[in-house]
Amino acid sequence: MSTTSNPPSNDAPDGKDVSLGPACLVVAVVAMMFVCIAVAYMSFMLTGNQGPRAARALREQLIPWVDDSALSKTDQTAIIDELNDLSSKMERGELTTRQLSRLGIRMTDSTVLQWGIVEDTLRYVKASPGFNDEEKEDIQKTCDRWLRCASEGRLSMTEMEFAFQTAGLKEPRSGRLSLRKDVTDDQIREFHRRVLGICEKYKISSEPFDRSVSQVFHMLMEDGLAEK
Image (cartoon, rainbow, N blue to C red):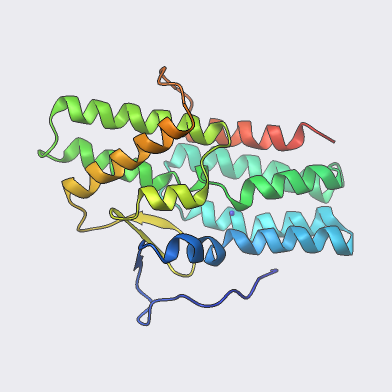
């Protein structure tokens, strides 16, 4: 992480993953599974009974999506627990329309839930003999800085897909980002260069950032609940 939208299909003819080329930078966002939840949230605002419907969207769409993601098991468990807690509050009618709307916005463009591809990238870098120790440390620090960028709500899905344009793939049906199986060291270096550019664009602090993905997700959800 039912109600669905009907964007123009951009599935590959054989159902395989597709490259993150320039044309998909916009189309991918439209095609992502999270759009289903965005449309669901808008319909909740119009039809009433928002809480129970939002809870169903989380349980039937988003939670299974997270459970099948490349995030670490620790982060998966923590995020799913949080989503289950949120869905229970929704069913009990404890959240206001404003809170539901703010949560919906944070979930529909959640780069944090796609962080499994970043973790796969770091594992690749660590195992590759093509990177020296200094490069490996630099890429790790840059990815930590990028997670800080996401925690501040500045990293958009379009920017994340742009960073992985040469090194990643997008699953056409789920919108999930994954590292190319045939990725090269040079493609990873290009990814690193783009991530640095995004961090510099937003003047993200380069101080150590020791929050986990699930902790960052919790921060974003708490921000969504902050204003009633």
